[in-house]
Length: 427
Image 1: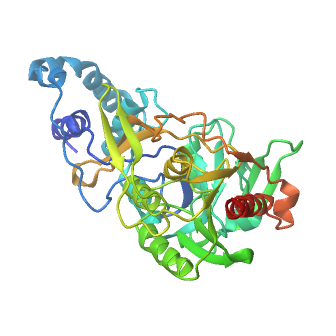
Image 2 (image 1 turned 135 degrees about the vertical axis):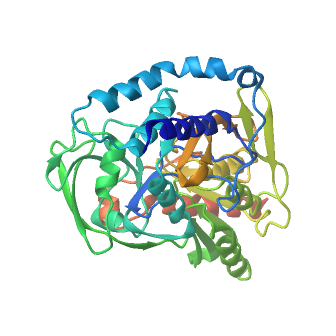
């Protein structure tokens, strides 16, 4: 591509990044990344089917003249020309340079949750929320030195193989990954259903690395399911907050509530998050009125999200299961339930993802920019970022229990719920 034409295209791309701002119902996610071919790099909150609105340009941006903009970018174009004139392997890939420039600009913010996605990765980022994709099925953190497992998706190949929260992937197919960017590692784990990948992981408490051979598969996620347990207790598991979660949850609750359960256990363990609007809809099934969350911006302003009407389970006693893989949207729901005293949290401290990101698609299918725009607060104005939600009843689930398919956290949740039901009945 002619350098002059490319320069014009790049200025256009840079302008899009500079001028695009936040929009209502922004994406509340950062580094929760499912691994897979067509999986979501992160869980965007908002309506992925609707283009975001472009905010008004700030006064500082309006004051920049074309001449000042040209001067500001002069060092960039000098570097651009040096690469084209002197780099040993010619011709260089202009598109890769442009994408790298955007990526570098966002990285310069110094925010782990702001990033650039190329077109393919951005497309992958939206696929998993539709409910299916190919891969090993695990949420990961790409901001650490090594690609780190946030949580395996229940029933996925990663889960069945024994991958656990906190596992650090230190080698793939025998290749040492020390010093390799975690996002590049994530891409190496990608692959079609039926193919095999060998992951070597470092696990806290283990003196030697562990090796797992995992056959990738098509992951079909039923994001909300329900069943009746003993003692007339209803159990609802929510695994993500995607396109189908709200109708699936409402269908599961309708079936359960028709059986007149005494109480409900809501399982949000290993739920890495999803759409903001879905989190409000889910919380509204259990909270009849009031604030679900606040979105707090840097200038002190905030957006308030309130409960919707017609929830099916706004009065029934609740217990909510959380663990270290409970993050973002699932923390919104659990935090609201805890603040209103609608139910106790049982398990271990949640992940602690309390910042808000916007995913803003760039023009002409050039990927998207994710920018942190705010923090979210619980109804009692708590911020959980980096801290997580503290359970009301702490219960660890040991490796031995997982291997033996013993769920002490669920058992404790049922015990606490039955105790509360018995206490209410005796009053």
